[in-house]
Image (cartoon, rainbow, N blue to C red; front, top):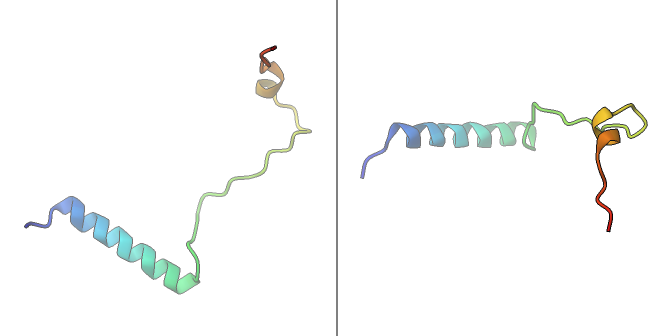
Length: 53
């Protein structure tokens, strides 16, 4: 059985992730999803066609 480069990279990522969780107490996310206000102008939502029954 051989350890491939992909397996090594995956193991390093997992180890880094576990260290991060131990250091901060929870997973750290860098991407934030903001709540989009329904009151703001949204052309895409206004043009959305609602199918009639």
